[in-house]
Length: 558
Image (cartoon, rainbow, N blue to C red; front, side):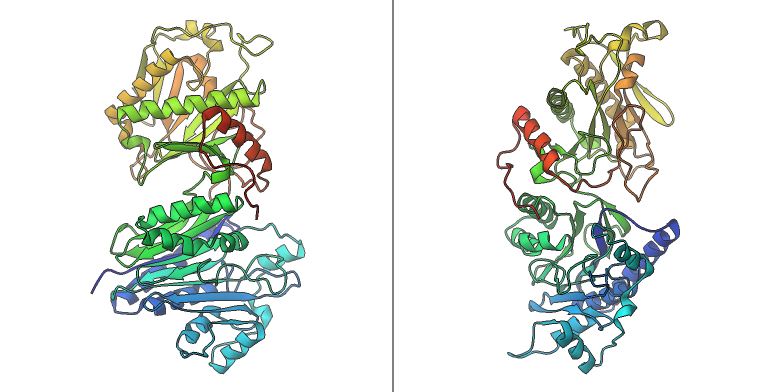
């Protein structure tokens, strides 16, 4: 008997709607469900049966946009869809536009048992509901699928709702077979008869003898990019499953810049992954092969930089205009490679990272103009990326044109890292109370001269060697972030490492006007739905930084 594994999802989305009690209840439900599924697999259950059963239970849980709790169409009714693929023989069945079948995935699973040259692969509408009744499956009145929250969106005529929803699962059984299943109620205010990606082979789901994939998110964009099939092709071409998902989503954003999605996948040797470029993705996973850790709950965005907004790309990191900003003009950067983190970098990489971030900061100031006088930085907990924030700091030494009176010295300045119980501060040596007034014109680390920057980054490298490395690690007891706050430069504080709680999670951090009085955060803000303005900024920065070729205007918008 080989390894077993399962990854399930409750939808990729931009927001969590519900109180703390519903959040905890959902996590408890997912924990119980993934444990039960894992136990069934260890007892010899097949991947396709477990996938169907898991998705059926997700359909019955009203927090999700599938089965009970489905989105309401433009006429105030409900039309559901589901699909399933058995990787053992690539058999696929689906049903869409269902109005009375209580569990659409059970119909798709029952259709798998009907073989022969005339057995339908995909059923739609009334015919699908009639088939469900003939097969003895439970049917309900159409109103059963509604909940008060979903109906309130319809009454408010809100087509922009993007909360947790579509459900699915990918499963590996002990016989080495994989399967994928997906189910959804579609999108709020959808036209009658609209079909999304969820149940469509090669778009929302895929499985063969080696890999199973299930997707969630913007249906039209996922179908246009044929996301699930794209991932499978990359995996079969030699990419690891994690890399295949990342590359496929990256390619899909170039074709459909607005795509917001999450992907779960599992291979026949037990490797599994869950990734998203949406702000959150509700998932749970368990199994034998890597990663061995169980996971239950909301996954934070793993791919925050999208192709059309990327302005710099090299072997070390990728930088782009943020599509989830908390301030105007915000940039997001992400280190490359599985497990990449500032905590694991060598000296050369640390200096290269800050050299590139300083180039990006200067380019941002040049592009935005006099409204920005400095750039702040904050890394994510775990140190695998972060944000650059343009800010305006009033300095006594600034002239009317915003220029500084002081010039950068060519002599390196000495910096010291001071550890406290709950933080670490890199200070410029020799800056005391008597120097505060004179140093009020200093810029932050990202815009100071090269000599001072080299000294500060050297002190950071020393701190990493002296204990900061452990404090930055995501699985560590502290999981600090790094903050470069230009307002602290006058006090000689070049960089601070500490814990900065996200008080708004799981909701997005609020978008602010960009004044320095607002708190910096490593969290993602609300999604920017209109990308034209962000693309203009990305194009300008790309020209200044010599960014990635091929990311040009003219890609299809969905």
